[in-house]
Length: 308
Length: 308
Image (cartoon, rainbow over the protein chains, first blue to last red):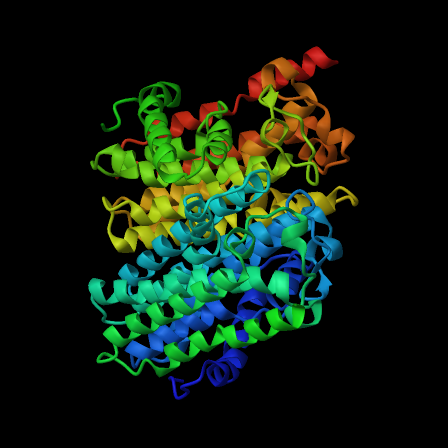
């Protein structure tokens, strides 16, 4: 299986059945105990968009002819880490969420102890999958371990979680909010693309260009998420809206307003496209470009007008 | 720094100031945010025996002339994973412990949210440390990632935690209890020795002999721990005693009695010594032998007699 699609939705449709099968088979094999397995699989199967693994595979496939399945270890690993972070986020001591994507959260179904351990298990298993992916060289695998652990760890995602909790009690400025978002969401999206580049022959400078694309993508992703909490409906977003305002969270719309937030997304998408243009001689970047269609500022404008 | 000590207490005295300094400097550098850093360092600095990192370094130093500091990444990583497991174990939803080693547990000092995230941060950082230890080859590092993630993950330590929680409600037989202990404690002790052997030139067969030593050690360790909960005092163990009985936990003394539990430790120590004898031509195993002095069945006998 290699990339034949130029649109991220078609790509997802093509690749996700294979990736989901991989996830399912590996989770069956690598987990001891029926309740732990059920709890871990419940959240992995909970209908996420699989954005991060798709970015891993799209990046790899754009700049390499290797079979996409060689990237399933890395793609699966980042999805496990993302899933663990959602389970722990939802815990009573954290965001105390009863629902995610319209379904009961992990601890509501399996209890708090099992939810904590399911999260711990997913995080640890991610690194096992990276280590055991013998389709890659030891050097490629250890690079991926370094990238994923730094992105998910106490200098990025975990730090961002702490900043998010602590930030509820104070007003952040734009620099701090941008840093928080980079820690909390951006680093993992950057890691997805970066882990993909590790499985290609791109030079470090070329990898850095793609990391700029990913970094723009990650920030735009968070701003759009913030905006949908203000402008969207529960039916569209699959989660309760208005939560950020209620929790006094720092968000882009609360800090710079809705119009400036939409404009910021447009700027980031333009810069991400510029980055892709700089590496288009090395591969067909149409698919990676199409991921930027995820940002629909026209739709956001429409929602804003409906709201007025 | 190489091994010059033949007794594990002297070895600890010699090596721990250096290892602790390494832990301290790396934690200062690798964590963003003062509260997250404080929470993570609080538990790493909480006065553990550092048994697992000492086993990593003693194994490496016994069969290699490389400077011990080359093993600090691996030694530190396993201590981070052990520390995270204690923080999450103590949470209200798990064992709900207020004290550990006579001091308030992490969540009692920093709150539940910070304790969960401190644990997540330590677990993730462990893999970063393994990945970044450029004194080792990529092959050695990725082997260590595989060993540690399998030992700590949902087929071993995390599975053991779940079995422990679920086992409180039913009586296990000896096979199940042995499996539970291997998952919960044994796998990580085996991982310590195994990660040490990765930094030597030992063959796979020779590594397997040392894993037998470690496996014996791990089970004896858990049986002695069970016994101290029945026979020991809070002053000696540094934690409240009688907890296992109160929580209806499955333990060796509750299942096979105190005398048979003490005898089992003696058998395991004898087998561990046999394993070491099989590799003594490859290095001076006196230090590894001395780790077995940790099991003091004479003392256990004395405590038992005092109790009668």
